[in-house]
Length: 479
Image 1 (tube, rainbow, N blue to C red):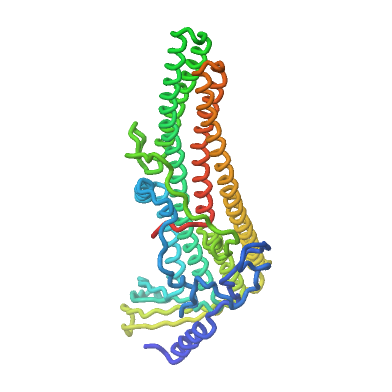
Image 2: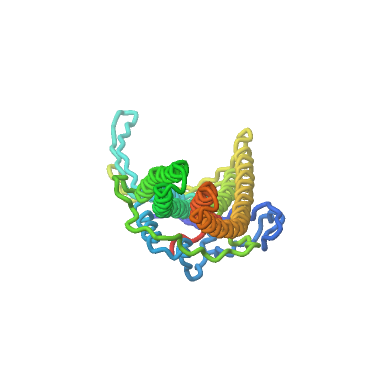
């Protein structure tokens, strides 16, 4: 049976765990990047001090741990803005079969296991103790004593060191979930980018085949004029060279198209085998998404999965400071057992309860150095988080500016194409009337063909700029 003193010791240690089981270090649940900026609302000018500030995306549970708050209704995935069913099908296949995503899931499973380990050590550890022994007296008489029964060990976590360690593992696990989301976002970005590059080469092939037909028609026109003795053979050779030049571009476009198709196959976790993963190409680029307005709120950027992952690692480093501080403070351990003993008089159950208080005295600065190391780690991750935020702003600003200037550039190219088209009609009329030689016709035809191919490429660039913008805003992957 338990003695009176044993029961009092258990109650005292339990009271310590309940009343004092808190960390002497307060975690700042809403760290902000140390950045000053114009045009980005809700952006702090300095990092707030540790205190009671709580991230709006978290709620503080009864266990003292900040959990993710209930999310708002889901928004459609970012690539849905292109309204392209072919693209939607490709991305669905990639997300379902990507080896990169499987690697991320495996890393997340490891982090989850470490979290369960850190959580488990906060509870009493139950075991089974057993012993077999023989004792001899002075007359060499022996007595045998056997004992077996349950035992318990519990660290009362007086100053929250174990709790801080669990929090650190929780935030590392949370960082892993954001990192997995970022992997998915990067995968979808690569699929969209590669798809538009492949679509561009498909459209270039269609255009080149149309231009070959036009060059052939012009060659027949010159050939008829040559047969009628109206032009020299030089005109015929010039147009024949123009046709050969256009035809020579077709294999290059086919090479590029095949390269991008193979890349898409790899992104879909399928070995390239001569078969295109795109069953049907469109005859034009999909609709351009609605352009995001300038002055992006800081909350939108901070929701990017890569920045959210960095923020969670920052919180983990903050929790590690609390763990390191607790290591310098007293620790109370409770050890108890309830054993059944035989082989001695009297036989029966024996209970033991021990409580120990451990206070580090002289460790030559080892524990203090650990606190300083974790504080330095926190600073490193804070500046990494801030740098990532600056880079996010740069990406958004670049994409917005590129889109605006690209739209202007395309409008000028379209005007130039219209002028060249009219010039070609006029030079062809004058040539047919015998008012000029063939060189103006050839020049107009070559310039018009080139600008038409350029327009396809620059429209593809506009699609990629929009893709960069949506990527830089950290678009949603899951609907």
